[in-house]
Length: 323
Image: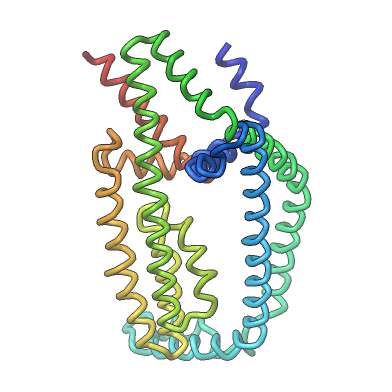
């Protein structure tokens, strides 16, 4: 029966997982909004409000992307020239490989084969647009599934959880009760230790981008948050930004941003994550990291929860089998 249900659920799994994840995140707020309302009405109000609120960040993201495109058209050629000049200066100071690097690097944007770059970019963009068009129907389908499921998560989510926990305890006794409690504690640990830490890192990185004068600091801060879900992932955003500042002539700002990223953003990851997850998960640092990375690669953002829960349950099963 379980295999049959899983087989039938695979096509709708992304939308359902997103609904469960969003419902889990926002359920405390829904509980406050639903005070005094019938469950169905409260679930409908929360779902409509969430969909309406989600439209605003989407509009902001489109506007920010347009601003970045305008900035790139106006300022990118001169900043690329500065970066290339700095790279040539660095290459000239390197022994043995300096001449080779200087020969390979263009000296300005005018020496770049823009036809070749344009052809490659056009092919890449065309492939992306084709993929977006082909996947648009899938995304719309999963969006409908997710919104519809979210309504019932708000209305019946606590009942579903109690029934699942009671069924596990009835079927497996103490092991079922332990598994249900382990799932609850692991989900809480991921929310506290991973999601909150990523939000703090995004805020700290955004402050650094703004102070260093990086273009579109808020947009980069938003990009930093999902990158920070993986340990050291935030450095994939602030480190290139610091290098860009240094190569375009603002060496002090680049060094300052790099120091801020290493001392503040990374320290928040190393200090907050273990503190917030303490005594809430049975997984140590490295298995938890593998579970988060593997779950994210397999299922996207919902995999941040599915991966650690699966690893925790597997560890519990092995531990009980070894008794």
